[in-house]
Figure 1 (cartoon, one colour):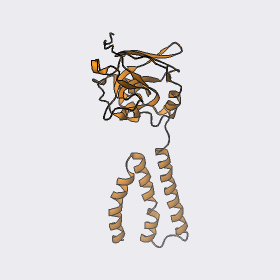
Figure 2 (cartoon, one colour; figure 1 turned 60 degrees about the vertical axis):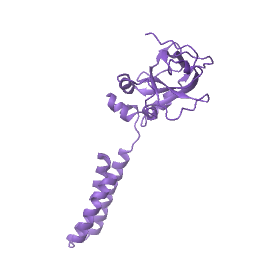
Figure 3 (cartoon, rainbow, N blue to C red; figure 1 turned 45 degrees about the vertical axis):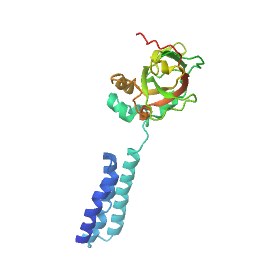
Figure 4 (cartoon, rainbow, N blue to C red; figure 1 turned 90 degrees about the horizontal axis):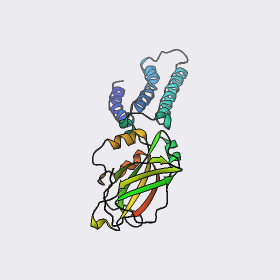
Amino acid sequence: MAKLAGIAAVLVPILITVTGQSLGHLASFALFAAACVPWVALAVWPHWPHHRWLFATMASLAFVGGGLAALAWQDRPRTSASRLGGPGNAVTSGAQNQPDLYVAAKQLRFREMTQLLPFCANFSGTGTIPAEDVLILFDRPADVDGNPAANSGYSYDGRAKASGDGWSADRREIGTPTAGAVNAHALITALLVPRGVADFLDAQPNTDTNTLPVSVMNLGAVADQITITRSADNTRCSY
């Protein structure tokens, strides 16, 4: 028994480290560990009733089943019903567990734009923005084919709003208002996010300087992307 206790003392911390990454997984580990208890009891008290082996087997299976059920619940898919109201929660959860967000994003598209765009640009698109979500725009330096510039980040360009038979986002500053920006290209991304994510980004300073990491796209579902070319008009937006 002393030897078994020594082995357990080594294995338990390792198993807790591997499986106890969350309360759900820790509960699963506890149930799996409990499945060993009936067999340990058999070793300690060998004079159990006649059906002691059947009892130990059934008890172990019950604990293992409970552990598997806890794991299944922990890893269950989340939908919009699991959205949390606080901006911090919205940012950390993003859209990874919200399949309905991706479905809604598929019908949101930019309208075709063929002309050169000034520094202060207007955008519009088709589709209906869900009432519980927000469509937000980002720009990122890119080449003519829309491939992002190496080591570049995103600039947050604010929210779009419902407009007519679609949506619009007017007076958005794209890139930099310098002579060198003429004929430069930018990738414009429309991202559908939970409202809390948009509220969080709105409250942050300096989000329009191409410094947001590419992981910002994980906060929502990409609806559409277009590549635009800058004109020589570097007039700033007036609000």
